[in-house]
Length: 178
Image (cartoon, rainbow, N blue to C red; front, side, top):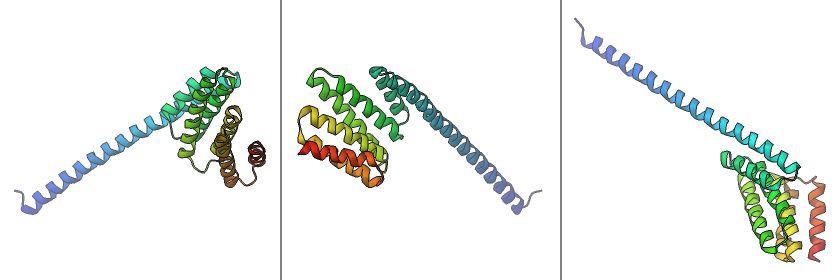
């Protein structure tokens, strides 16, 4: 016959067995989550590589499509966002109609903003945004964009004091401002 202490031990074993199952299920769930997360990051890199290839061949619309897929799958990578902004800036420069320029530039601006939000310490997000604002300021003859260009280039220079390109673009922007 079982004593009272024997039944307490059986109960303790059942509790421990249940905890083992709970921990096992939690670990399996975390593993599945990790696999899905990293699979999305990997697939986003595949789309990004395709986008870079299209971008290098100046197939702008195909590049935009692939960059967008990369940002949709993995929005945590700032280079996806600023690359999308760069290709929209390129598209804006090729526009014949001013209204189309504005549409492409607005999309570029939003992509640079997302890049800066994703990683506020990435100098390239600010550098490329500054370049886009500089182009918009000159194309639209709008000083407010030139002021934004200078601000972004200065932030890039603050993040990397050795950036000669940022320093040169600050000079070019100041020259455009007069």
